[in-house]
Length: 559
Image: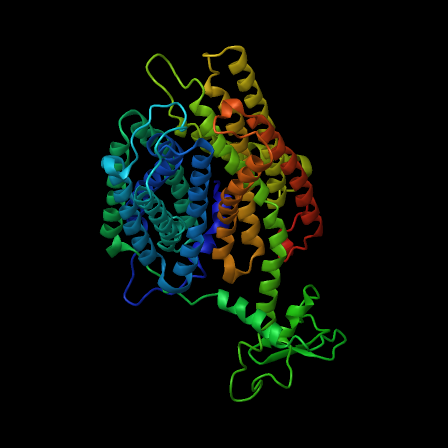
């Protein structure tokens, strides 16, 4: 991600120069080696495990292929959803370091369980030599409890570390330039760890043994925990300021409590601006006319508790205009946010299905090396990394010279929608070619390198869609909710993985396109269906953009 995007993310983690706990005058670049080591160890361990989880379920637990893809997608969704709760907990109550520490310990326990499942034969069903799982013995309830406990702990542990390491890292610096530089290094280490996890860890698991592979993950997570603790004496730890989400709840409660009060737009009512300042409905400081029901929360009535008296008004009955407008801006973004769910669903389906495709394709690369099926998805990550500087230093500057205006975040998101559709079409064409080749030349499967085409296109689309969404949410969310803004795009990913399992279940229920053996199915039709749905969703996105009213007028460049 480029430095301009990083600068936009900077206040999220600085959070208005939060005061430090007394006696702590630390931080600075001395903390970078400890934070980077923590992030790299956890990143390669978690990503290496999740990338190959589908293959582990297939080969070691004899799970049917589509079911394995569903379980893997649910796990990936959890790894993106739980960190939202971790970020809220850290921002509102505990601070980043305690939550990261707890998450690192829980991750360690997760890898202990994963290693045991691979090393202890009684924790797995007997190995099955059948090319399909038909007739194979599946895991017993006890074996599955241990496996699912490991996945559950991995999600909880990642919830404490994934977002909060970036937050704690930026808290070590005061100046904008230093925070921007930190973010550059943060993404270098983050994506570097993902690539190592998707390649080296997956190769060890496939080529050496699962026990050794998970053992390496356990060692990496232990190293991360040790480095986190070694750097503790150097960290700057800003004090938390309480939950900004309480104000949102107060607006809803106050509005509901005044539901029977009519809102007069002709100056007959007065609104609370805060600090004893009152305005009428015709003043510039009055609440906006959108979502008028919420304006009741800031309306001053005879029933308001002691307003203007010695006591403060009841915060659960009388809110400020700013609190109301903050909730309105949050609600106004949700239609645009929802338009990104379909993009994430299509990516979730593709990631799961493409690993199944890789398993039945020719994965040889030279006479002595086979590409692990779980590593094929690294192509999307590499495309993301390569596309980001190309877009930022070539495409968007050219756009600016041609149009005389910079590309807005929503324009980037819109282009991401289009590229995603192209990637789905490419996936459908590649799968059609694979099926045709398999039927015309049995025993001579098509090269797995063909899958690089759709994965690379989708990865380039993510380089448009993901940063564009992140920048848009940051610009439009209230300052007090910018930690939530950074979580909105990952929340899309989580929703996508969860709903992709629903989509696959529906396809299996109403069609015969996804049997246990994809060679006997029509996966290409699944991709075509996703392409059509994504095209219709792009139309919905355009309608949302057309109807959206920017709250930050200085940044609103419509599509």
